[in-house]
Amino acid sequence: MLYKNLGINSKGHMTIGGLDACDLAAEYGTPLYVLDEDVIRSNCRTYLDSMHEEFGADSTPLFASKALSFRGIYPVVESEGLCADVVSPGEIYTALSAGFPAEKMFFHGTNKTDADIEYGVSEGVGYFVVDNLNELAVLDRKAGEHGVRQKILLRLTCGLDPHTLEAISTGKVDSQFGVPIDTGQADDFVRAALECSNLDLAGLHSHCGSQIFESDSFNLQAEILIRYAAHIRDDLGYTVRIINIGGGFGVRYVESDPLPDIPARIAEVAQHMRAACEKYAFKPETVYMEPGRSIVADAGVTLYETGGVKEVKGYRNYVTIDGGMTDNPRYALYKADYTVLNASRADQPADYECTIAGRCCESGDRIAEYINIAKPERGDIIAVLTTGAYNYSMASNYNRVPRPAMIMISAGKARLVVKRESFEDLIRNEL
Ligand SMILES: *Cc1c(COP(=O)(O)O)cnc(C)c1O
Image (cartoon, rainbow, N blue to C red; front, side, top):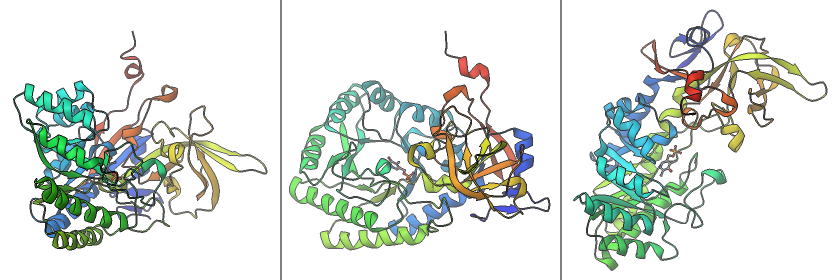
């Protein structure tokens, strides 16, 4: 098994956090998102402990909400001591509704509308991560109207090209995110921020991309941000307090992906940062990181029921499931790899080559192609691993498929945390 919280019981069924996956599917229905809370907490602690150790007691990870935003996640990450990234008023609202403190939120986004900015300021969001000059001007005005001095970070691009998919690479100069250092525009951005009387320029932020396995981009990014902070101090006469190096550590979706060693990677980034701090004689008070995927991805498994097997002679075999791109669009979007297994026959050899197809009227509705699983029959439970991140948060109602339910498992007990959508939910807003 890919992860240590997964196993096989005496019935030959797959287990998640000690519970029989087929029993869970029978009790809660399928498709079903299963989250192992103990794994999420352990991932939070790994980050928090390493960051405290490497960067000092004030430095914390921020949970990137976009990876998995629903009410039940916020008390978990908050109780583990994490802050949170949000990218929309909807994420702010969700987090607030779960009691997550506004001052622990960092508000991202390339295009925050006037209404978004108004909402964030009036709710007391701790930090705005300002993307561009347009946003800066509106935020200064809104902060003034509310009589607050809004803390901000500036989002910069460091000119790095991490080895990851084009669609999830964000740190290049040619990017819709942030303002580039290389072109000299970041200096104008900083000057403009310093002229805003209602804004407190707390620090700098950069995020180079997602699902990155090599450390080079992070190491370089840390160095570039420190060098740039020293440049602001020396040439613009202002000292920032915070350096936020974004998210992006890769997670293991299939056995051929490396098993990431988070503490080792944080230690490596920290070592590069310390070297840069020494070289440029600049030390930030606080360092933040923004992991999303690597906090929740490996805690998630999606369970489906098999509809049947279709063998197209001379071509391939299709296994159809009762979900697909509506609950997990990542294969359709990026041809993302997944590990799939037959949870009903977890003890049998995975020797049946097939393509897992979803239920939508769309030939792109697939979860994996040319993979091997134990040959299923109609009714078998199919498990797709590593679905904790960017599955529920990207789900849609395409073909009027209701979104699945989600359960959380902790200490051998399961509880419902998101109800399955009903047909009434589908037409709720339609007049
Ligand atoms: C997407 C994103 C993250 C999280 O990335 P992961 O790959 O999920 O760790 C963090 N910060 C910002 C600004 C992002 O856009």
